[in-house]
Image 1 (cartoon, one colour):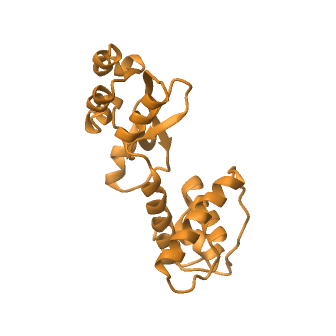
Image 2: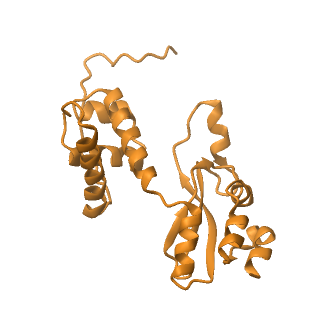
Length: 205
């Protein structure tokens, strides 16, 4: 069988609508970030308004839609959608709190411990060899690993950068120097049994 990128004979492109289970404030926040960024850098005219761009990027991130498909459905180029995606990811990343500042905020609010847990955000399985690291044997699925810290009430206060799905919670914690940051802030930590080994010292603070 010969693989080809050419469309089948007598075929035509179809577009369809897809529902995003996201709140209006989420879209408004992302669109607002883009508007302020555009006002600051004064770029050339954009083919779509910030709100529409925000929805397209959220669809790409939430449903892992192919860039080419999103581009075709919105009458823009694939490179344009890629640029929008990367631009908005950078804007969101710039808002993320640093770990030391997040822990100091917990202390100022009277907190004594934080909750630590790793989570896997599932993604599609890719065919490239580099994607093998994204397979989590624990979850039996491909995805990206994140380490999250919450306060005693379960409110998210910090989340790590994305790592391959095969990453263990302990490895991620050591890479981010979680224990050192906890000691510096004078906070204890609660975690599951898989992380008990490295949290034992911090939980006794």
